[in-house]
Image (cartoon, rainbow, N blue to C red; front, side, top):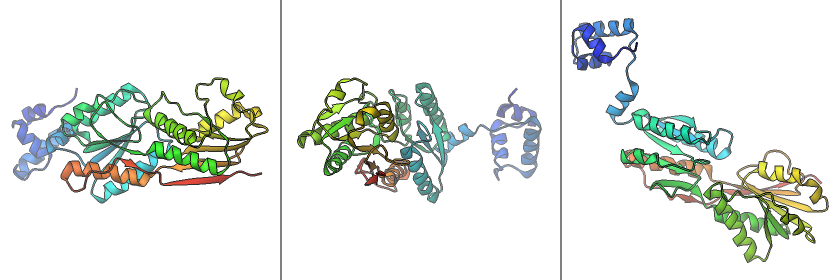
Length: 320
């Protein structure tokens, strides 16, 4: 049975406030009483309620980074950068993973509201309902979202200019002689995918270059490649591009491929002749997120501009 503060007070013959102060070595409590209370607490296995203590103090000195997974660049690179900046101001960081599951996300939000964090940076990718965050906002709990836009809750979102970034991919592919684009953005999955799709379509249409959406897995796009020799294949991630090319490799034997994606590309570009990667400004996003949290806590920083340009475009050449 868990020992509570009132149980210790009864055993020691003092009130609960005296026990609470003695546990924390409050100088207002005599040395004799403090030692007696702490000795009884040790014998009874008493554990103080950390959440209640932090809540009473106002906030802890821990920022939470809530992410969908640990394997993507945008999550771990931003967390790494922000943790360094937080440490310089005396704050620690903790990473919590929601795995794209709604119940895990909501539970993490509830835990933050119990006083276990000073603020949070959240990537809600693959989470549709973020209404649980409203309770944190009502408590004036500092929250900033990164990457995926949020419209259902009035909260700051730090993200890249995805339409402009996708347009930049198109422009660089056109310089490589691309005559047609095959796009693999999951437009129904989240707003980022839709923004990137729209950016590609807008830029390609302006240049008079056809765009074929192959993301649903239909067969119509295959016929539209007839007569084109230099094809651009664009998606948000390397995995999506490579899976698509592996599945349809025989159809590209007589084609020259230029692939494009976001954030990073591991290994050789093959079978693509070139790969163009739009790298997001991780450092800028992390700095903006921390600026927002510190501004909310003590007004020490200005409110950040939430939309950031792409940091750079990298071009990888294949072996031929």
